[in-house]
Length: 84
Image (cartoon, rainbow, N blue to C red; front, side):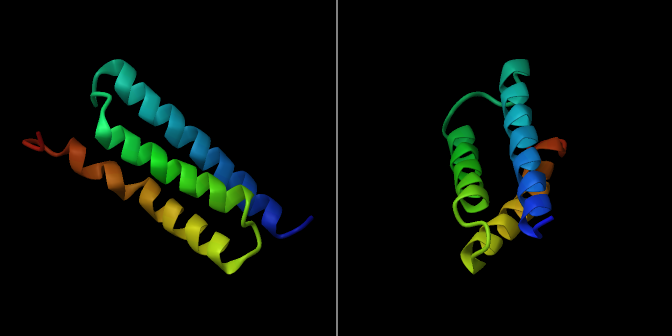
């Protein structure tokens, strides 16, 4: 098996789960549809481009790395009391 296949599969699963999470937040009313969500969608598009179009290039690895770092902690602040 090639080395890029598990990385690409893990990245695609992460992109899918982040997309479902973003949609679930909007449906349940935790975040209102607006510019904040469009920025998240733009980040997911860049993450998807790096995963599919630049799989073995250094720039693709950097995009995947930064996208995976952004996936978790970017959303932690909204759980704090008094955030809004």
